[in-house]
Length: 398
Image (cartoon, rainbow, N blue to C red):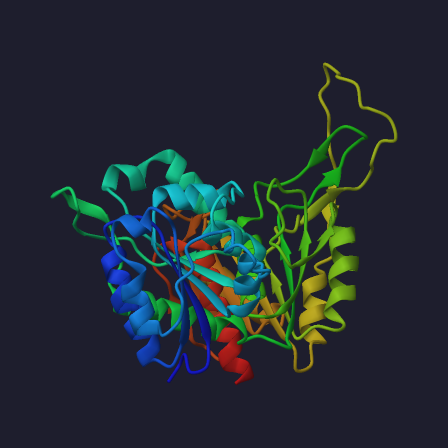
């Protein structure tokens, strides 16, 4: 049984879908999990603790403060106990509390004190789910490592039909199984991920660069860390916060990227090169600010060192994955880079495809391997693309 011996903290917040949480409990148990239930005060309006207690054979915790004379710090003990936190249903109110670090009840306190993986099963009316504040809160929680399952489209409590219906118990438990399986699948592996743009100075105030925001690399680093890998994220300038638990190295120029990458790769099992490396740099960098001139300004650009060729050529048993951002002759160019740079896998990213490219949360890519395999992927989140790349890595190591 996939969940055999795993400790799952089942949090139930106050929504009509709380009745499904009973079947989630039973399904978790059928798959071998040890389940402890925590309910919010509003959840008690929909279902009684006795139902969960009779099935879990454990006391259901509902209050942050223990009974008089009880020295137990309940939220700390529960936080340390769980292998996985599963909140089903997760209401808009509860999602908002977690996104803002609020902890005025036992369930929110427990999750804030826990370093275990956390899975949310959102459930609410369609308009609530679509509200920008709710979407912002969900996006932030995903950025810091929370995962979600659902919601689905279907009949809602109001009688309307639309998105917001909590995922069915079997779906929730399947997602819990997959999340726990992924938590340690890369344990013991060291992965270097490069991300973001590079910059080359022209003078003290000006530089040339590209449009990369780092979203693809940061997503891969986050997903690799969630699978238990020891991750080093080498990033050019970006507005993104490095994922929690990931070692972060800041660089600016291609030379700095080369030094940091070569150093980190020495003790690594894999390199995933998503950074947008400038092909050229000015051959002269002015020590003082260049003044405006009616004659304009001529820049002479010279090639930067393509250091990935050397890393690929001397990789040994390590895996090296590259990215190809293309606009013309995309497949031919990607295959050429795969061979020329001695890569194991290259990810083709076509800039002129809707939903792909810089600054968006989605991507459309095709994976090419050195043995001729070609895998096109449909439009999906960059985190999902990262999972496909990591799945490929795991298969190579298996």
